[in-house]
Length: 539
Image (cartoon, rainbow, N blue to C red; front, side, top):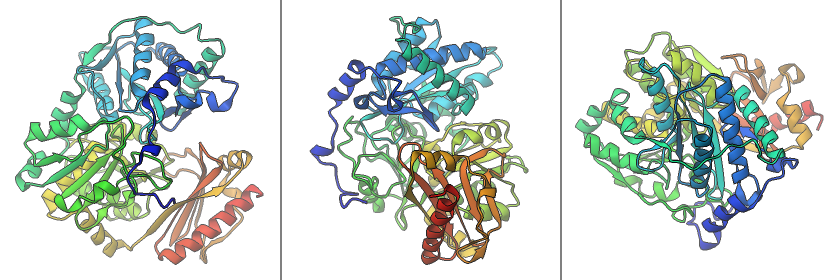
């Protein structure tokens, strides 16, 4: 961690938005270079125009590929499109609209030309497709690199289920886009024209009454501070205040493409990560002014929860509290509705699930895995350790199938209003019942070959029988919830676990680890985890 982490950004840390925009149009990628190809990760294609990794050529080709994909899937309804506040999001949205219009797709953008949070776009798709008057199906595109630094752009596709596209869809789209680029984009059809309009904000904010106990929040007079961190939720929080008459202050209503008002993240970069204590330092500084203070990233699919008594909550801690609260305050949810968590989320969630007699549905990293369960109501809550989650409406029907940082932030106010306790206090009570886990993620060096092998490891490749002095009871290369490959492995004992996954962007692999025996035991788990993984990789 740099010694500048948590300190205000300086002039030398800021991007030149004009240079970033110019590079979007001026630089042409060479897809024979892996660094300049279209690659869809867990949340779409991301990169910077300055690196020839996110340019007009890319976006035109990706959009054309999406047009061809949706035609092949028989998707004939409107395509909702929205963007966040990153510099590259505006140009990319304009390029995409030209291609969509050129191909005769009925594209719907924000009615006010404003920013669209990821959950608002997912919500719009689902509401449209649930209307029996609509015989066709809608899908969407979100132009966002999420919490990435200001120089980056991002582009992701959400099919008719409203959530992130699965690997089969993204692989097809990426491969076809790279083919188009390699051939000089001659297959791209573009035309000038304006999109149709959709009121994302009104539809989303007006529907919140059906998923959050707004009346309880208002009656209790919860003092809410909401910091959009310069992101797409900026107008939404003001609208929530005005529509519902809440005691809510938008603590930072500014939007600046350089994000000069941010404090630096752990590595000295500007990164709008509401789960990072360094990035949220200026927000946490105001914690005593409100009953709860929240943050969102640039597309509002992540949440950060700050309480006067506890400061910024660890994402795993808040997920555990949210689950414990929701499964005792949503009587209309199905009795067999499972609790969804990713493989690298805290095991205290397992204990909460068991205490409620609920099935735990453990899946690989990536919110896309929760989509089917949220759609049919068999999973009432799905959450990731990286501060992303969503859950069902009060009546047990689907709300969003993408992460909803606004929703999870607003839930904290409901929890305070109904229980009279902060989420931090409620987590302390969970610890008293289930133990106090210590959780951390660290990185270990790995070559590209080693990362590739790690992604294909089987539990049988692990020869160790003990971890930090305890017998190993599970060696997982497939998720228990759905049997999907985890792209790495997880090793479990009664007192601890670790998971190892290759990084998609750096020559490292990530070790997630947790211990119920304290920090020293966690360090031992991490050290042995690296030896176990290195041995399996032949390092």
